[in-house]
Length: 119
Picture 1: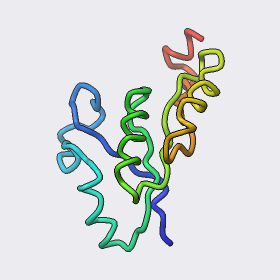
Picture 2 (picture 1 turned 45 degrees about the vertical axis):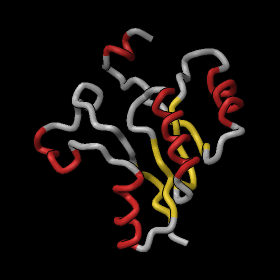
Picture 3 (picture 1 turned 90 degrees about the vertical axis):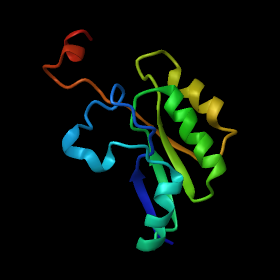
Picture 4 (picture 1 turned 90 degrees about the horizontal axis):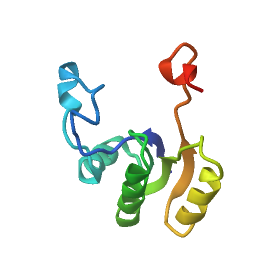
């Protein structure tokens, strides 16, 4: 079995995905399970792990919904706000009854960033 362990789905919005600029015209569009399935078949990939592209609980819930409807999505790496007390455990408990939750991810502020200066 071949598993693609990291890819992203999204409904494209320039406001939410500002890093996707005009130089990336090929991906300035929605990318959904129906777009991925023919690529998986061509590459011989059996399953995937979907990883959040935005830092939001809403997107993680959306990815879990996609996984419930798409049997080839074997796992979801979502986002949780790690700075809030007990947020990881509380979210994990909420998601534990859903198919495919595999892990969480977050971006930590880098040294010298405005976010790091405020922590």
